[in-house]
Image 1 (tube, rainbow, N blue to C red):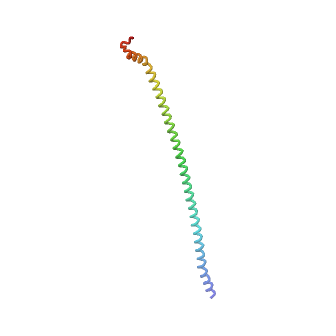
Image 2: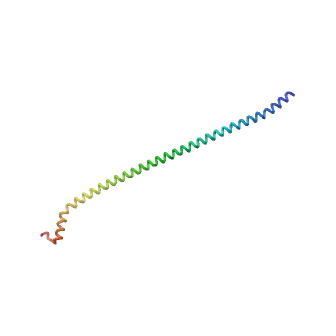
Image 3: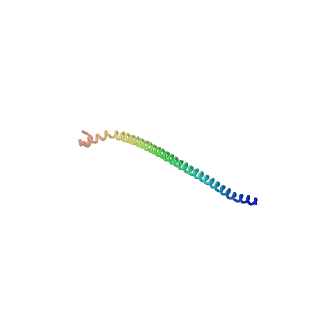
Length: 122
C-alpha cells in the first residue's frame, strides 16, 4: 500500500508541476511579447524621427537650391542686360558718328530750303 500512496502523491504532484511550468512559460512569453512590443515601438519612433529629420534636410536643401538657382538666374539676367546695354551704346555711338557726317550737308539743305535758294547761291 505504501507504493500506492507514493504513486498518488506523484500523480498529484505532476499536474501541479505541469501547471506551474505552464504558468511560468506563459509569463515568460508575455514578457517576451512585451519586450518585443517595446522594441518595435522604439524602432517605429526612431524611424519616424529619422523620417522627420530627412524631410527637414530635404526641405533645407531644396530651399538652398532654389536660392542658388534664383541667384544664378538673376546673375544671368544681369549679364545679358549689361551685354544689351553695351551693344545699344555701341550702336548709338555708331549711329551718331555716321549721322555727324551728314549734319553739315543737312544744315546747308535746310538753309537753302528756308531761304528758297535753289541753286545754292545767296
